[in-house]
Amino acid sequence: MANESDTMSHEKAQFLAAYDREHATTMRVLRAYPTDKLDLKPHEMCKTARDLAWVFVVERGLGTFAFNNGFASGGPTGGMPKPPESWDSLLSDLESEHNRFGDMVRATSDEAMLEKVKFFSGPKTLADISRIELVWFLLMDQIHHRGQFSIYLRMAGGKVPSIYGPTADEPWM
Image 1 (cartoon, rainbow, N blue to C red):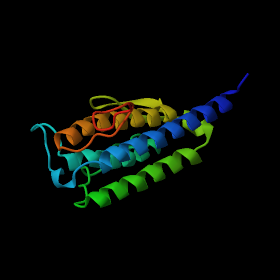
Image 2: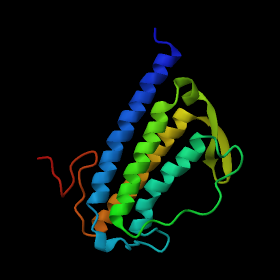
Image 3: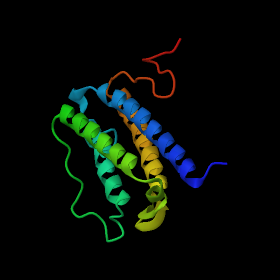
Image 4: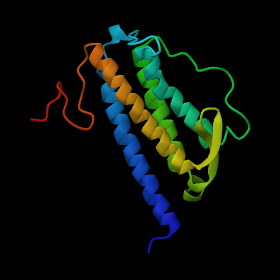
């Protein structure tokens, strides 16, 4: 019978494999975006394509803040940083933040992955969740935002790559 540490090592390994796999897919979607359409804003309540892509970077920083239990002593100060003007810089920043966050998770002991930290559980509401729950939540949120971004990609006239199956631009048969 596996002990709790073996189970966590397995779950952490599963997370890290999914984290890297989903990141690679996200990068394919972002790299397919036509850079002359970064100001596309499908609706007045939507972000521009550039701002939506920047969410992938900013969430890694927010995730690091939460992972280190920063919400226990209040929220982050200041507003959301502005995205760089250069699309290549934004993509490079995302690669760097992806690696930094993944390395932080890899370096965290199984016991620490089970410790509780404060994170959002609803509007203006924080709750205690384990670090492993936090990292999975952040990954699912990345996937959610990638789905949003794939719609922007289609609207901008880009070719939507395969995400979980064939697309009109990348058929499997």
